[in-house]
Image (cartoon, rainbow, N blue to C red):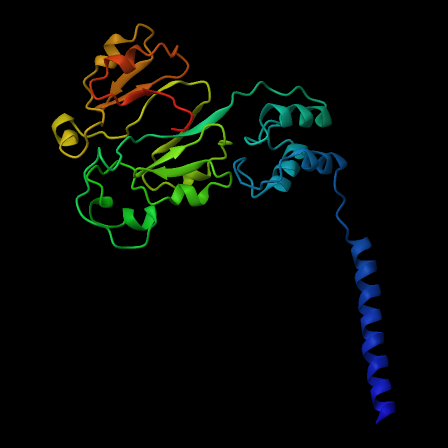
Length: 268
C-alpha cells in the first residue's frame, strides 16, 4: 500500500519536473524578442486601456508606434506630455496636440423636451432606441438619458442630469468611448478651448421641432447672419459652429431666439 503511494508520488513528481523543464526550454527557444522601446513606451502610457487610440490597449499602441503604424501622439488620454516622452524614446519631435473633450449635442432636459410615452424596459439607450419612434422622447434626435455613455466612460466624466447626458470637461480625456456608446450619435469631440456650441442635433423643421422641444434649433439663421467671422452655418435646419473660425465672441448665442447656442459651462 505504502509502496504504491510512493510510486504514484514519484510518477507525478517526475511528470511535473519533466513538464517544467520542457516549458522552460520551450519558453527560451520560442521567446519573442520585444523591442526595448516598446517596453519604454508602454511604461509612459497611462495604462487605462480605454481603446481611445484605436487599439485594444496600451500595449497594442506601444507596439504600433515602434512599428511605425501609429503616431507618437496617438494616446488621447496622455496628450502632449506623454507624446513628448514617447517622442524622446523614438527620437522624433512630438507634434503639437490640441486638447479635445466630448460634447453632447442635446439640450432637451426633462422640462424642455416632450416624452411621447413612458418607457418601461431596460434602462439602456441602445435598448430604448429600438422601441417605437426610436425611444420615448418626442424628438427623435434627442438624448434618451438612460446613461449608456455614463457606463462606457472609464473616467467618470459624463453623467445624466435632468434627463440628458452632461460632460465634465475637466475630467474628460477624449477617449471616445461615449461616442461609440450613443445610439443617437449625439456626442462628438470638440476643442477644449471652445466656449460656444450648438446644443442640438435635430434636423426637424421649425413647427415640427417646437411641438416636441422648447429649446431645439429651428434653423432660423439669425446666428449665421450675425457672425462676422463666417463661423456659423445652418444646413438642413440645424446650426453648426466651425471651431477653427469661431472667436468665441458670443454674438451668436445672444441672437439665438431659442437659446440653444450656449457658452460652455464647467460641465456641459
